[in-house]
Structures are given as C-alpha cells and as structure tokens.
Amino acid sequence: MEVVITPMAEDAARVVADVVAQLVDPRPHAVVGLATGTSPLGAYRLLIAEHRAGRVSFAGCRAVLLDEYVGLPPDHPEAYRSVIRREFADHVDLPPDQLYGPDVWADDLLAACARYDRLLADLGGVDLQLLGIGSDGHVGFNEPGSSLRSRTRVKTLTKATRRDNARFFASAEEVPRHVVTQGLGTIGDARHVVLIATGAAKAEPVARAVEGPLAAVCPASVLQLHPHATVVLDEAAAGGLQLADYYREAYAGKPSWQGL
Ligand code: F6R
Image 1 (tube, protein in one colour):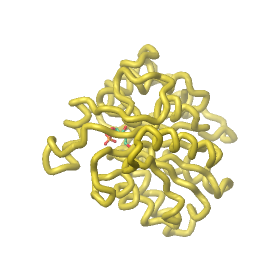
Image 2 (cartoon, rainbow, N blue to C red):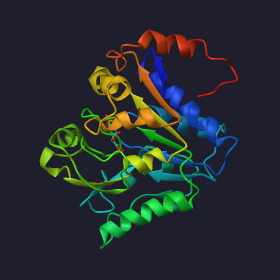
Image 3 (cartoon, protein in one colour):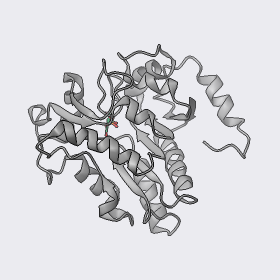
C-alpha cells in the first residue's frame, strides 16, 4: 500500500485526477470504477477541466459504479447513477451506454448482483477503482463486519452511514436502508485501487484502515492485502498515522520512472 500525503484537499484531488488521466491516455478503453460521495468530487472536477482542455478523453472508456441505493426510483437525483452523471459523466465524452451500475431495480435483486460481478469480469476487469472511506471504515457500502472476500450483494447501511448521508436528502429518514455494493472481494479484483480521503473527520478511519489490524470491523483495512493500493490524503486526514513521516519521505524521494 502506498500512502500519499498532500498538503490540502485540492492537492489530493490533483494526484487522483492525474492517476486517472495517466491510465486513460495510453489505455483509451480502460475500465474505471467510480465512487460517489464528496471525497472524489475535486478529482472529477479536475478531470472535467482536463477533458474540456482537450487533454483527456473518456470516449472509449467504460465506467462502473461502486454501489447504488436500493429503493430510490431510477431518476431520483440521489440515485448513484444520477449523481455520477451529474458530477462527472455528463460533462465528459463518456457515451451514456458505457456507464454501468448494478441493476437495483431488477425483480430478482440477488441475480442482478451476480450479474454485475459477471459484467465486471466480462469487461475485462476494473483497471482502476476509486474509493472513499466512511466514518465507520466502510469502502463501497461494505459496512463493518463485511466478509473480506465478499462479492456484489445487498447490504444494510449502519445508522452512522445513514446519518452521514442524510446531508444529501431532505431528512435522515429518507436515506435508504439498503444498497447494492461491490463486495470487498470484487473491489479487490480491480488492478489498482485508489482511495481518497480528506479532512480531519477521516483521520481516525484512515489510521485504522492503513495501520490497524486487518479486520472485518474496519472493512477498508482489506486494502492492506491489495498488491496495488494507493491511499491519497490531505494533511488533516493523515493526522492519525504513526508512519506519516516515512510516507512523506518515500513519496518525496520516488524515482521519476515510478508512477503511482
Ligand atoms: C460512495 C461510497 C462510500 C463513500 C464513503 C465516503 O460510492 O461507496 O463508500 O465513498 O461513504 O463518503 P464521502 O466521500 O461523502 O465522505
């Protein structure tokens, strides 16, 4: 796992946007996994700006959603497909039919989950999966206790997550209780996982994920097993890390041929 500590949230967003742009440039048919929430928004804005400046194209890419609420109508503004379109996909040249998500509106939800895992494999696997981290240590919506090898499935959100996400809804009661999320095993199949976290509120879950024990109680700790995981932080989110000086030194001294 590589930990990149940047001064400010904007710098973290720049690092993440550059990783995506550098993937898509030589690999125009890349499969990119997109997360919702606040954490990746700065990176999405930078990528949109890069696209408008003619420096990056997503025309041949396939984008896949990390998770989706169960129970919202498909055109609900907070359904994650709507969020990703509004915050990113509609502003770049990604063809709408190359944006995929789990079919949470299917009659047979369990079959739809299995289909989504098959789809990711049929696309050739995910080249780069963007992640945020929840205050309870979740990635995707794999809440504490999730199997570290889980596949895409239905999960029940914790009270803490529903409280955190209430800011996107008129009231906490409107936050759905269930989601379909890529499992921790599914996320782990991505060739590169990039987690972005900014702000002091993320310092504790980040420290548990990066330096705590590998344990289902902190699902993000599963990234410790991934052969290519990058955790991009601002100083505030890095505030709980014991080895912060080492991570800074290693990143500052990276040879120029070695990308992220
Ligand atoms: C979003 C997702 C979640 C968020 C996490 C952090 O698709 O799967 O894991 O990444 O809840 O959310 P923010 O970035 O809003 O703090």
